[in-house]
Amino acid sequence: MPTPTTPATLQSVLSKAGHVILGKPRELQLALACLVARGHLLIEDVPGLGKTTLAHTLSRLLGLSFSRVQFTSDLLPADILGVSIYERESGHFRFIPGPVFTQVLLADEINRGTPKTQSALLEAMEERQVTVEGETRPLPRPFFVIATQNPSHQIGTFPLPESQLDRFLLRIRLGYPDRQAERQLLEQGDRRESLETLLAELNPEALEAHQLAASQLHASPALLDYVQALLDASRQSGLFRHGLSPRAGLGLLAAARAWAYLEGRAAVLPDDIQVVFPALATHRLQPVNHDGHASEAEVITLMQSVPIP
Image (cartoon, rainbow, N blue to C red; front, top):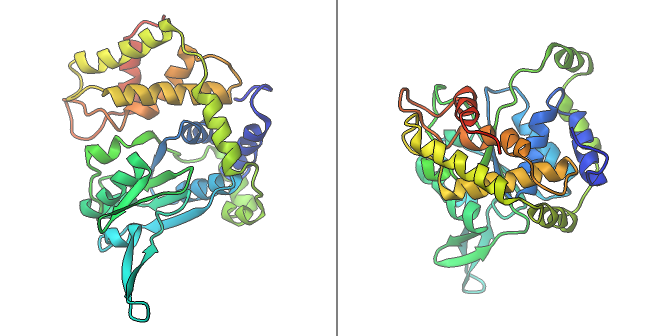
């Protein structure tokens, strides 16, 4: 995991998060890399595996304001964005901001909301602003959406549209803990109680400084050739209905830069691309031979077909 040259505060964030989310160091680093890359994170798994706890943990350690929205079938866009109310005393409308006006928005069980409600987040995720009743309002900086999603076969879920999925830089799965981590969990109890003792390791200004530093890591022409080769392979392999978009290519490079930054390097290596590629591509690619999105194994097979420079 991170080397001694990784910025100390980010090392501490990963270390302390690992005391709450047990036995998932790779997934934690992917989640932090997503935020360092200024991306939004999708966490998909069955209930009870720590998705919501992970979002709470990162927001507290990064010193960011936090709001949670529980998505249900009767949730309305105004419940997320806010609404204007008429004040009789002043004779004017007053805007009451919704929970989206925060730095970390946890969209819990996002695929239990209707497509109309899901689409309320599109502008916020892409433009970092929302337009309500004809007026555009900027969101706080930095702004991240961390969404949890239940498996699509569960009752009461609505599939996320491709335009929504593409706004998420990375998708991760926590999965069941290993035997040692689960035993520790059983012995020590629910880890959510430890959230109350977490202190912020960063503030928004420090996080934005890390984001800027990560975005400036060197990527050689050969590495850019490798990124383009992966994009071309996804489009020409015949395995998927649609290949990866240019925006996905930009996201791949940004996520790889963030991963390399967390590893303490000054330049991006092919290894960094390979670590983040499955988390970037699985929710964007749809195989031609079955419904649903690509599995990690299918994406790894695609990646292995492309020579490393």
